[in-house]
Image (cartoon, rainbow, N blue to C red; front, top):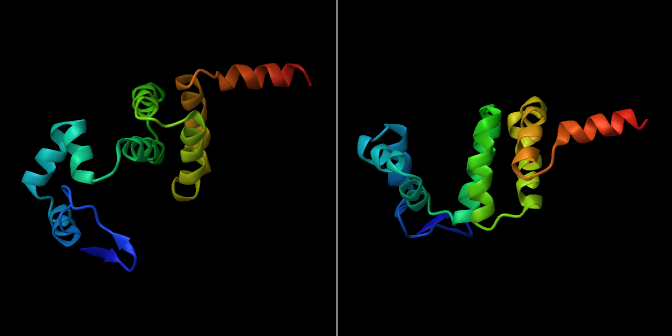
Length: 130
């Protein structure tokens, strides 16, 4: 089955993207119950690999303006699933055009803390050295 010219669809849970899109559009209870039941079920239904799934979750968190404490578990999962810090920061860059600079500016310090870098402290030190 093909989604668009040259773009194959994984034949795992998303067996037929047209059926899945219809189910999403009508908020099919069975699909949503499964997807919301666990992270593993949601990842299985998405047909994304674990790292990509984690980075998409990070992008969504930025897009909705997640609270600072919400970033650590998402980033911990991304790192555990093989994402590099550069890929995590790259996700912020990638989501900027869709979510807007203010969302990314707000997320950057929380993402920094989650990867072991205190952006605010670094900015204060930089400011005091000028």
